[in-house]
Each structure stands twice: as C-alpha cells, then as structure tokens.
Length: 82
Image (cartoon, rainbow, N blue to C red; front, top):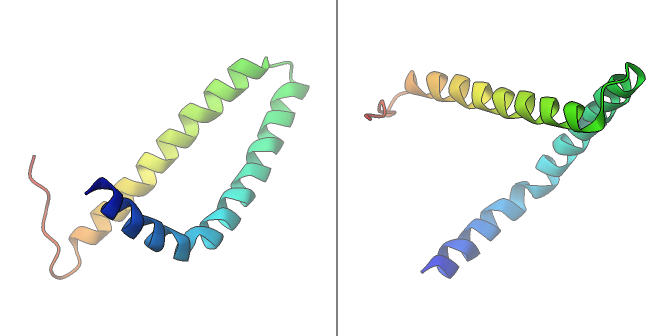
C-alpha cells in the first residue's frame, strides 16, 4: 500500500518539481549570501548554519499557519479539531 501512495505522490510531485526547484534555488542563493555576510562578521560556520536552519523552519511554520488560516475562510473548509 505504501508503494501505491508513493507512486501517486511521485506523479503529483513531478508536476510541481521544476517550479519548486526554481524557488528553492533562489532561496539557496539568499542563504549563501547570509552565510557569506555572517562569515565576514566572524560568526563560526556551525553557528551560522544552526541559526539559519532555525529561522527557515520558523518561516516555513509561519507560512503554513498563514495559509491554513486563510483556508479556513474559504467555502467548504472545516476547522481542524484537536
């Protein structure tokens, strides 16, 4: 059964992969600039990487929360319980 879902998800993902790849490549360029600036200020690589990871996860959570909140106002959407 897992393979069935995997095959379906592969088909869905493939249709969006190029668009997502392009967006992530742009984000990677920005992260590289942040890393570079942090290096110029003497911040150790591990500290820069840990900080950026925390900030990116937080941003992704914020984006998801905003999307979920806006989805609640759409017809046919139900509020999650629990």
